[in-house]
Length: 247
Image 1: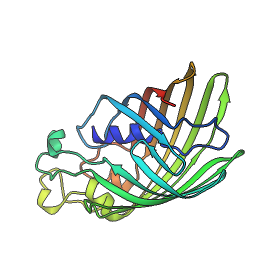
Image 2: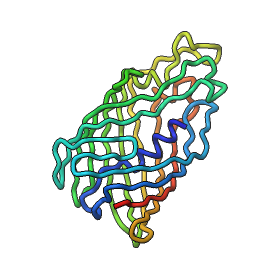
Image 3: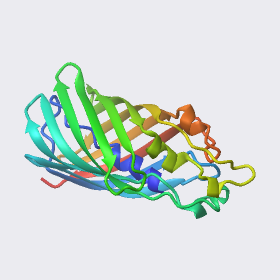
Image 4: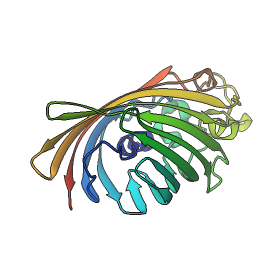
């Protein structure tokens, strides 16, 4: 459930593009999503979660990320942010994880730099570290978001790549010596790079309502797939939802 919620709420966390109509200050709604976690014998199935988004002059809340803009113009934004990391699992989530210590959610604090262009879309570079020292890890990410329209639909294709250090990857995908059993040997991965492609489609329903759907696929690197607690080479997420602009 944790992984599903993270994908759903960050799916709508793309930066506001310069060529979009003015973004409402407050948007609330609900999402229904489906994504299989990469852990062995663990399937979260369908999940319904709320959506909240806020865009202020200096502060914003986009899914699980909240930030404050230090620099802001029509084409550039520099912001400090906090973002919930809901990766992980409880050992009771899968029979294969029995005997493992729970891997807990955390809070990342970081810095994000975003460039927007009428022609090329938005490019964001960010760096974040585990503020609660659950994993003690660091993540560096680069992402691109475009925009085009067809009839009443607006499409936002996206591409991203993230680098996670050995501490972060090891916490969520490693197996400690004390957790090793027959068929689940100890495993200590190094840092990993994960690419993802996505497409978000939105359509207005009247003046305040909006429907949307998103599909995304991440290709998991060998540092993750070689883990004895992982049984997938990739991760696909699908979601549909509806939002209401409060103002």
